Image 1 (cartoon, helix red, strand yellow):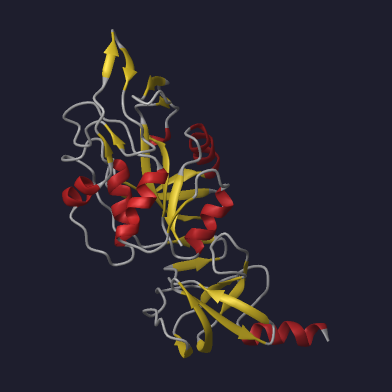
Image 2: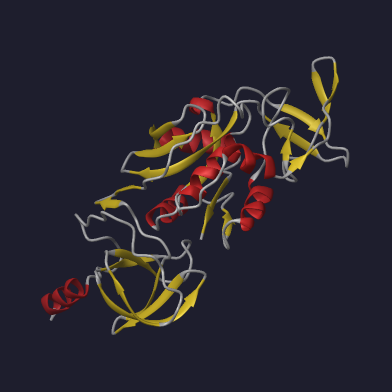
Length: 294
């Protein structure tokens, strides 16, 4: 009986609890059809317990005709004799064992956007979905808090709130700081239906999004160096902000057993590698900030 059940699972292309070792995703899935009914999946894809990358991955489904019972923001619900599963709206470039890598266009924030890493990292994430953006126009649309910096000697006393918009000058002609996930993810609704603020999650959740074909923008530091300063200022409303001038955002595009891979807008590098341990140290020190797209 046990051998029969294993054979049945493999025949269906689903191996509960993990990917089948050696599965290789060469291309994203075909363009999503929003209607219900019979559809054909051309490529193997992960399936989830619910219509969210935060839910559990229950296995993979092989190329086949599926009967779509329900749709939700690009997710498709299909049913087999083993239960109901959700297919995500995007595919994966490849998955081999524990390694996943997405093919995401690399972009450089320089020379025009010295302080524009968040904008360019978000641009790369959106361009994964075929959205064409002009770097300067997109950065110009990013929400901003135009509060002027006030100083007492060398200390910043009053400045803007990164929870409202980009603080300072995004071009770098004068001081600039950052924009945080909440206002940036809200802004991205102008381009996609379901951006998500992942601040505070653990790295395993970021990996689920990557497995589902979705890049992640993560707030770290330039070259993953230690946080170099602890600037503290007040907003005009009396809110305290603690910042660091080596705050940096990168686009996470993949991972393997020991590393994460990023497109780095600071250098224009594609698939820049950092150990998982170092990423977690720096990302945690910067507040575990991240965004992606459901």
